[in-house]
Amino acid sequence: MKDVFLKPGKERSLLRRHPWIFSGAVGRAEAADDGETVRILSSRGEFLALGCRSNSSAIALRVWSFDENETIDGSFFKRRIDAAYALRQRIFNGALPEAFRLVYAESDGLPGVIADIYAGLAVIQLSTAGADRFREEIAKALLPYAPRGVYERSDVDGRKRENLPPVTGGLRGEELPEKIDFNENGLRFQCDFRQGHKTGFYLDQRLNRAVVAAETPANAEVLNCFCYTGGFGLAALRGGAKTVVNVDSSEQALAQAKVHAKLNGFSEEQFKTECADVFQYLRSCRDAGKSFDMIVLDPPKFADTVARREKAARGYKDLNLLAMKLLRPGGKLFTFSCSGAMDDDLFGKVIAAAALDAKADFRIVQKLMQGPDHPASAAFPEGHYLKGIYGIKC
Ligand code: SAH
Image (cartoon, rainbow, N blue to C red):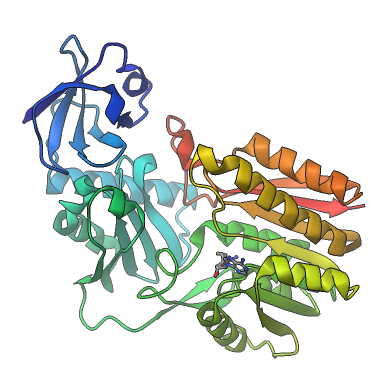
């Protein structure tokens, strides 16, 4: 195995069990191929970890194991995936939901590996050169938890940074269906695992959708912005809303949202859709004097780097300001940010600034985060990417 020495002092993050080494921290190193497993050593030659090398990414090394005696092979992936499953069993006290995240990358000790389960089908994303080398081993290790098969959706942007082409297709299982039906919080959905966003569905919001269902005022008029396939909108109807307007700029997402409404027995009167840019739609509601009892804002990532944080913060502020103005007194706002670069503190400040400009007395009732099947390692704060605030305009 090749040795990679770090520059003096650069072992600190690994000693705290953070699994990344940036390229600037790499000292003397034997040339290794992309994805190759290497030994990571301090400048003095002490063993630190086994990791995978990336020659093109800013993150040059990602740790597979801090144990010098471990071999990174099929049985390593089996051990890690079995442990990830055992953790989910504990989290849900044995009552696993039909759809859940089984492997959450770094936080499950498997950088670059995501595996979501939808009613017995595993949908995986391999985003690093290291993970890409072990596709077969990973698929094999997932099979006990994915009796219907394993489908790969490695078409994520991050692969470009690793010089990897997009890869999609079935890895295990015969004649995989076009879409897969599953139940979430008592509602029926279809996961478009071949074409949908991420692995086909935003599983990270499952628990927050349950909160929305529980908090929906009876007969509420609800606005669900960035609705994708309608998850929050259906949750609100299930919670007793009168009507929900679901806004998204994607026709394809809205078409699937309508199918979901029908599957769950809601009419077009109850579940309305608008194909529009949310910012423009909110302004048009303001100009038309419309108002709502509850608004959900679940935008896509506005910033994935700290450099773009300022601009993203302005985007979040405008969005929340517009929404707060449309809320009736006593109206509820569920607002989210999935930008890793926006930390809790900054998100709170943005919401405070929006309330100030909207001249709203906005009370924070509950802070929200990604669901419990996405448990972030304490050593890896980057794993806490989803932040939400539930508040009421008094
Ligand atoms: N709330 C959804 C997930 C939202 S993902 C759920 O629970 O499943 C973000 C969505 O925002 C995507 O569907 C994308 O099509 C949409 N989107 C992105 N930019 C937009 C814009 N400016 N206006 C409207 N929709 C937008």
